[in-house]
Image 1: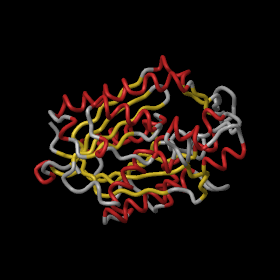
Image 2: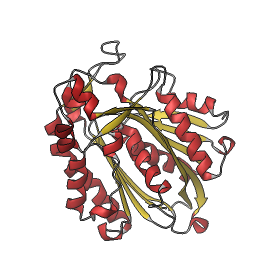
Image 3: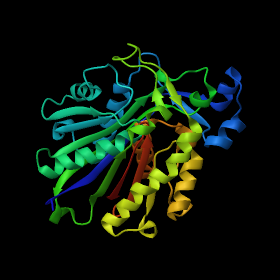
Length: 324
């Protein structure tokens, strides 16, 4: 057993100023606010401005997380950024964040697990902190999905938005941390389903960024089962249960998926943090965005048991259980 526990020190988030409402989308295409809300729970989403990149969103979220933690950029020696929409093919967007924050030591790299990106990044940071190789990590989820949407495809373009969220983690001696910290994480993937949610471009295939393509019904069909699978693994690993969860912070893809997952797990609706109505699906940014909202409005407080889960293209899926 490791003698180090990864403890949450602060959260931050950032949303672009531009808000795109369902009503505005309805003025452009054959859809309506009622149709979108009924099927997804989404009422609006934020869209990055021209010249505003994933790194810009990530930097602002990271700085707010640092401010909330009481730490400075000089205290950070690891940055892991979950994103499917990097600024460039390379270098990793995380090194741009590192440079702009003025960090010149340690390591920075991206992970790509689409909507599960933040959970994968969180589990990776936890593993590194537990080795003692790094002391404090910035774990970020940031996306500009508006850049890879087909705005003629009403089945996908109404679902996604742009944003970023961040979490500062510190490796603390388990004796000092007490009950606080990341208790367990569980990651899965199954490449047999990759054609159900993918982008039809890339540097090795088309030489273009491509557009998002999705078989919505198929994704929905698999989502609830996969999500509950890794959550049940988290409960088995820790001895916790739905009854002991204080807050459930799921990936904000679709209100119906969120509600169905909570119902299947037996998690009370009042314990579910939901921001999909205001942000849409921000992929890897959605969990840290929702987490930051719930921390800043006072719902999540010290000692709370917080359950995170996500599912994304690949398929990838994962869970994490944190004592705040």
